[in-house]
Length: 180
Length: 160
Image 1 (cartoon, rainbow over the protein chains, first blue to last red):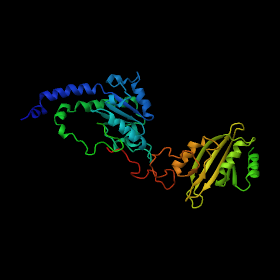
Image 2: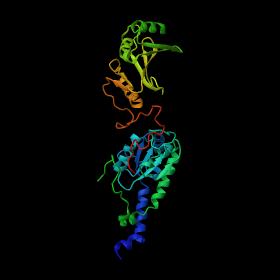
Image 3: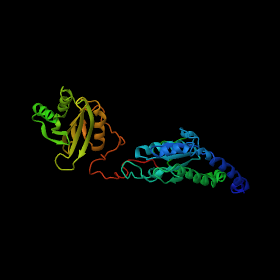
Image 4: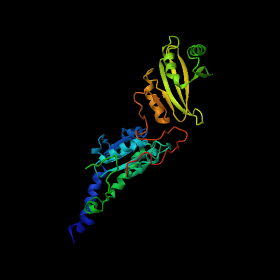
């Protein structure tokens, strides 16, 4: 019986998980991927009236290297999809994605050749937000949903079971380039 | 004013006018596609007409056997406060027309957009690249035979 087995789901790791998850969920720094009108609501969410800083997410960073959660706010075209994916790939782990609004989640009213019909076609999404555009309250709700999700992550357990983490054979997508 | 414009054009280009039309006070004149640069030059430089602003250049896909494509030029004279519309027809096999960037440099992006959406080539254009679609894209989205949702897998998405 190795140390890994002892630690896997024991008292120590679960308590540590709780501490780490608590820290992570209360300081989610967003990457404001505002690409159309949803971005206006996202800015309103950061304003004093709705005040996203109540949930520890007021630090919008314009460099992906300092971000935890990407808020994709707007219509993603095929041309833009490469850019969105590149920025996502540049964010350090652990990272999450909120798909804000109808366009990002499903293409919305743009059922057309130029618009990607949902960003989940090329990147993982944690929370979808309905609305066109969603009200700031709705975005805050999605942030709370994400916090709930992070609460139940098994951080340390996953570290010890690292061999089980799935890494695609060919690395990230073509045209995006690998981040080493 | 419209009569004056039409008279001047008829005197100057008797052979290249293919028809004209007036709708709610705006004149549109149809020309042979070979003469479009000369016509534009004349409309800009004539001291009475003075069409100094290119408002828009766009394409139309009529989807018919003869003269499938049309290019429509919208000109404006700031001094006379007057619009005019010029039209040329192009056939499907070889949709080529001379570029008017030598007359108005503002035509540059209008022509690029028309090229991007319809595949109409502008001869003599300084920089005829795609405007909106990816540069390696092979289709022309506003043609009538292009499906609304595009051609599957014609634009690669990043792999998940």
